Length: 239
Image (cartoon, rainbow, N blue to C red; front, side, top):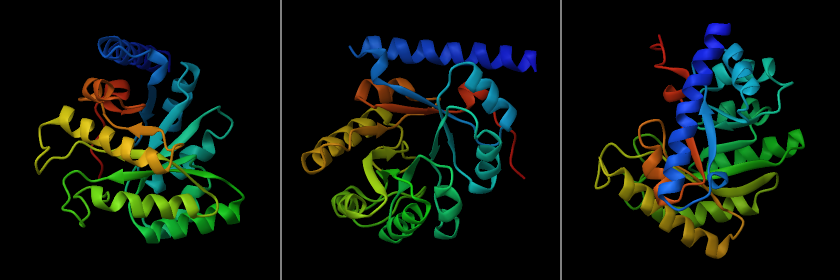
């Protein structure tokens, strides 16, 4: 366990330095960017080590992995983010532990999240996942709503009991006009965030950037970066 803690501490220090350097290069304060460590496929013991090392935000993308892990770590001072594509039959479970769902991309999901948040007596932070590889009305390959659908979906979240519209999230697209152009993609997300905040001023979160492109996300203005492999190592292949 000591070896694993040393490994995670070293990796975390490298990522922290990258974030700090990116903030400095962008003329931003380090406190403007929150690091979310994506712990998918890794055990609760790693989450505990990360908490000991000062990590306060963790993310998961599969409820079947996340639910037992969150239960094992319920005594820790952590904020849990759900970042994967979410099916409505998993909503009750996810609402039980997640503080934020970053992958809200359709009205049916908003309705289900609202119902379960009210039932659980919780307020759930919601980010609209934006698909920059989608057509004007389609969804993206990895989920998300097209830019043209943000306003309507955001209004639904803002009006839904038990939900709080927190902001926008995207994943750098693999296809379309922004493929291979992470800086431009994240810049587009920031423009969309500016538009959203005209009608929803409190929706200030902008979640973008992962291990390979966090610098571009910070440069564009992201408030949250989601980093997994750079902290935890290359993930084992899922069976």
